[in-house]
Length: 146
Image (cartoon, rainbow, N blue to C red):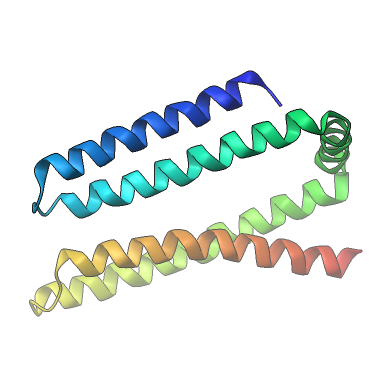
């Protein structure tokens, strides 16, 4: 594992500390929850990166094998085509969802039913669904062609 991975982990931990400080400093503000969330996100990412760095430093041979397998996987032509096809399908489904949501939000806005909290939750769910749809489509295409 590269030394830069350890540095990124330490930077994440520093950012987590800064976020925690800001959250504690501002106390009962509406932004406090966001800073606590950033603290958790940066902290978990930093700890995970540091643990992976330490683990792979102790298991250098396994790490080299892992890198070789990843290289083989990336150069596999069938999987490249399937990743491309999964990306295309995911994009098309995403565009359809966005188009429909524009119509729904326009109607809800015209009726004064909607507030920004729903939009933020929707966009978060949309991001997660895009990732999951891409994985599901890739795996189904892989089963179809293998």
